[in-house]
Length: 512
Picture 1 (cartoon, rainbow, N blue to C red):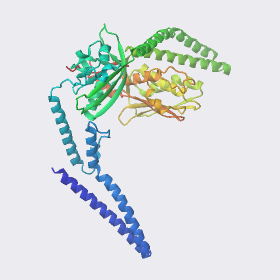
Picture 2: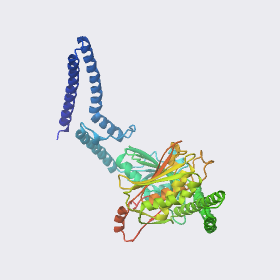
Picture 3: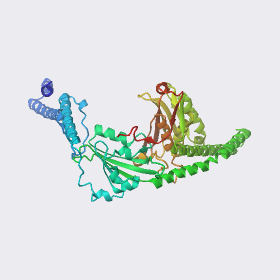
Picture 4: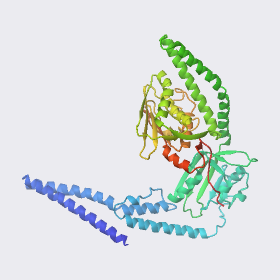
């Protein structure tokens, strides 16, 4: 089909419609003013002004409307150019004029690019004289790898060889995944990122924290941050650059600190259980008719004991997560009952602070597939955070509803201190606490980290929105049991068991 002629007809039709509409408007103004018997000179002036204004508006609108195909081709060429500036990818499907022509041209451009790349790949790579012992990166104190289009290692510097215990020459021409057997703390791995950018981007960069190198028994553990840069059409075929930033000592100390604290606080569970039992017994003994000051005193003691219990549970669960020992068994549960139970269990702490919790649960929420104890802990952590950061506000809102995607979403909203935008990305990091409020609000910096791990293991997502001085909204989603039932049907197990936050492999199969 001749898409050029079709585009030309569309242009002609649009211009014709614009001219007819503008002339009709001008004629309408003339007729109306004449009907009102306005003086001829004023009628002429008004008609000319209207003509000029509408002509200008139509010119601006049509120029933006009709230039879309040219703009799309311009964006496409720049996006695949090896030295082009970074531009937004064209949204060809949303175009009203020239869409078919632009799609056809874009396919041909991609085919030409792919053909050029394939021809380049058929040429055997010869050692580049730049990648020798005099190459500036050879003395870089950070492990550096340069990969080709097949993710084979073209170059590894001396630091990379020392870091892995393999000579740089022995790594050359080997597949990167055979040398670097990595695990990541989330599903966002280097491998999945690279597949995505190869399909959708010309240039991209990304970084990951707390990456673990899976090593043999005779090699020391390696924990590091990783940064990568991708360039699709590098003329030397240096498609991907990877740099490692070793943090083995720091990350190991963090893990050991949690393990040590977990071992210590584990000994608190027995006396803490006895303490809570004695407090409850005393509360029943004195009753509500005793002296108000004594009742208030016992109420605060009970709230403090509950808070200490939550702290102990958080520490122990984080240690289990870091050691990949926290297993979650998902069962069918009534979500309204779980939310209300969690609110009831923490309402005492809110009451001591003079805060009321308003709960709103939509009636159409289906049953969910959750591990009751762990998801209960997520809700408690979010409400506990809201209590801590409510400042002078006395209301916390807890809501549960069904999203348009069919997921069960629960939100916890406070109207207190709020969170600055520059620290939002760090909120779910282990041990992180806002330095501005650290001295005013107590905490360990583990609650949100633990909550994210548990929600992720449930197949959900956790998020936050906040405005400084106006409060925050934390929310998370979980799957209805109906979706998990399908997973259960395809499994040999009678229940779904998931790890809360185990290391995730970088790849399912080595490329050889």
